[in-house]
Length: 100
Image 1 (cartoon, rainbow, N blue to C red):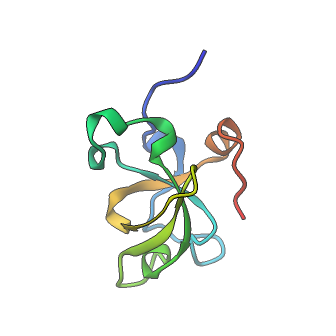
Image 2 (image 1 turned 120 degrees about the vertical axis):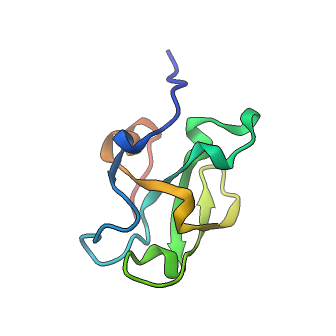
């Protein structure tokens, strides 16, 4: 049975402002807050976003811009404060996603 519950902070290993083990969140899958989506686009899959670059990927940077892509490959810029946090290993396994 498919899980339709939206992703929450419980599905994260840390928030976007916590120190990352390697100093950056680049290469990680982040979870977008559901409130940023129109109701018909609020799905678990749409909440996932792969961080590629931007000052927002650095927990200590002043900038908020995060560039990357969704699971379907569509590229976008999303502000750091629009994310719940970094997806944990259970979420990566559920969607068969790789960190790097």
